[in-house]
Amino acid sequence: MDQRPNMREFSTIAGLILDQLLEHHPIRVNISDYPVMLIMGVTDPTDKLESGRMFKEMFGATLQWLNEEEFVHGGGLSPRERLRLTTKALAVLNAVPPNLGGRSIGDSIAEAKNADAPEARNRIATFFGDFIGSAAGSFPKSAGSGG
Image 1 (spheres, rainbow, N blue to C red):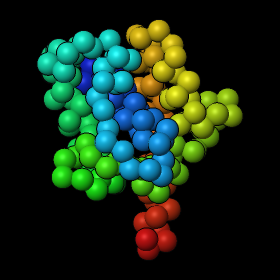
Image 2: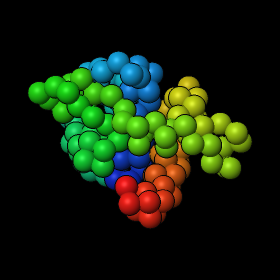
Image 3: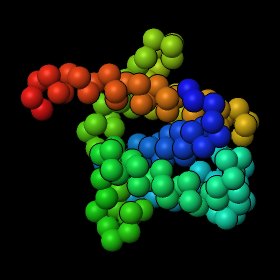
Image 4: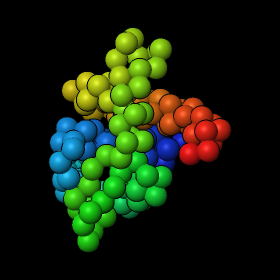
């Protein structure tokens, strides 16, 4: 995983957004930044993160990236409204990489939320790195099959 602060923050936020949606799937829900803030130790959306960026800026940009990369699908007027996971996201969250001891990426993210805040952030960021790796591994198969 990239050690830059912005990449750790992105990975943690993305993992926690996907976890929120997985908890409610297939029901569309409005995504909240509050649970993400709690786990990240942020008290206000305008708090600066280690990267120097405000939490709300990183949260919004991460959610936009998840949408643009087709991991989430929105059905509301706001990017946070009526979201649910796409098939692509579900496939990757259910993947079981060898380094997770038989647990899926989604289960590993959910379990990591219960750790102390700094440890949780690092573990979730790592699991999201596995998520991206699993997603990237499926791209050549999709491209090769004409889909």
